[in-house]
Length: 171
Image (cartoon, rainbow, N blue to C red; front, side):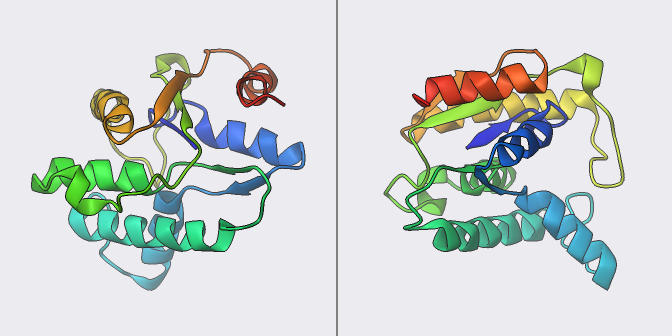
């Protein structure tokens, strides 16, 4: 799992891992935003955050079903825990009530820290860096609280980041 701060280089890292032959899964949120914008839907983080997060959880669960049993490394750009953390924060629902009891990803989760020098907004990322940092801080707490080991990604070029991830996984 590659998670962390918005615009922290996660998708670029996942793309680099894909270029090295690893299976990858694109960020559920970006897929949902594209789909909702195309069909005129409202499950968008800036219109209906709860509907957006519930769709992200459903999509992440579907991604996990597709990956289950492949036996290969697969790197997800965000996923179920991120969406559940957002929904728990938004609704006050305990995260344990939103997640299944078993761990769904590898025990090591790589978090991209805030990186103001590369932070940019686009059509799918409209929130300011300050909100991204708050989300990152929640994820720093949530992942260990549900049984994951957090490994912070270095602020370095993408090839070095990919090497760092693979070294941590023993490859």
